[in-house]
Image 1 (cartoon, helix red, strand yellow):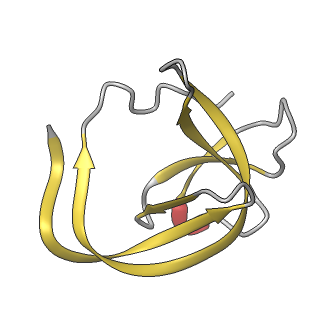
Image 2 (cartoon, helix red, strand yellow):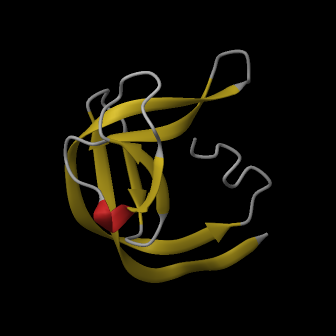
Length: 101
């Protein structure tokens, strides 16, 4: 089930690149967990992607080899705008399962 599903529509996305080599594309108003550093125990904050800055730590869900998921952190090294075709907003049961402390 999707809130938005427009395959042919073009949109501007933010491309986040991290120190670990990962990347993520999302809209300005997409919410993402961040903190000032990637140190264990750092307080998480939920912010709009447009408010992120290079050097902050972002938190993303990753898959382990055993099929479990976990939250990992990585420092932002680059934020760029990219134009891409397709707008999708899936409704998932896991949305915001990991809450800020």
